[in-house]
Image (cartoon, rainbow, N blue to C red):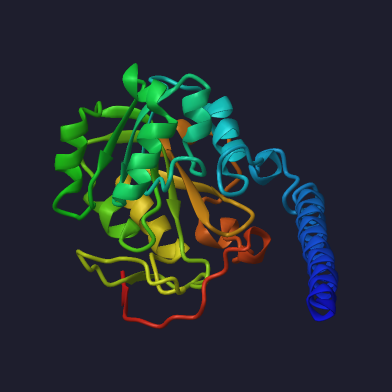
Length: 288
């Protein structure tokens, strides 16, 4: 009986000790996040980011992974909105992407994701938007051959305000293949590991699925060149070095900071600020 009582007391002490450790870890995590955000906000208010035509000082996070929500809002403040319509693919579970903030702000749009699990969650969480037709969601895998058919299947109009691309791999090739919509603004993930002047794109693989490494997507220089070919100017990259922002050439005028090159707007990978770094991975790239 005494042994059992001693064991109970020891277990209680051990649990209290472990809980105190967990509390400290949680506190440390919160402190790190706070300090990182303070550092971020200080940085974007200093040169070279404080030029009024630059966008980085306007970044903020509502439902995006980092500061994309604010950058998107500022771009449309400068160029205006027309259809208030978005199209995003690679939306995850619907709670952390580049267009949820627009949806909640009254925009309508279209989502595609290859995960049946994620799409089911979206259909549950955002049922009221789907039921009114404000949001249409498709569970499908996107390829170069399928994308324009999927756009037609969803009934997406030709002219939309925003296209957002984040599929961790074939992003460059899918954007190149898109002909069925003509967005005014394009947001696309770039691979910040591949700094300017590298102009590299991962080999196209139809059934590509991101393996969790830094072998994915395309360099910013490659996307800049593709954007130029399609009639878009690179106006910004977000501070964490994840997404590049393109505006259709006829809308740029003198509203944004130039020259509109990868060398001007490249931001290095600051993934640690999102606890989302990519382990090293090597694979075949193609020069474009």
